[in-house]
Image (tube, rainbow, N blue to C red; front, side, top):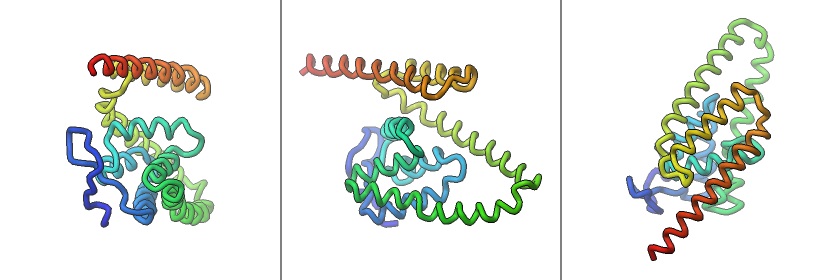
Length: 209
């Protein structure tokens, strides 16, 4: 695609300059291609396409934007697509990215739903769904492990990030606490801690200057 030619924007200091979408059409096509790959483990696909292949953002930027997209209402990847589209082209860019995420996948899902309705109760279909669930879980876990390195530059610090992730896992997977409680409790505490750390960092920068 034409969008694969680099357009220097910024660099994270550890690699080549980032690229950016060339147009709203580029956004639509790119997110359409991304959406058509997102069967099950969508996080792995999104990270590979936006960070590794297209280089529209760094790993650190992806972790931060994905965190925001995850706490907003609606599907995570749809939220992320609108954030990226809006960042470069405003509201028209957000709508172009949204259209790319939804148009062809909606058509395919409707067709698959019609086909699946006739075989939903068969052992083969049930086994296939269980197998795809296991693969999706593996993809998400692998991507999470791959992105751990980006937390080293997080304002809260790597140890705090790991502790929060562990507490979240225990609260949701083992204790079965409601998601709203976990978001309000651990998420709120994380926001306060990040705010305080950023304040300390800003103060230290002012003293140096």
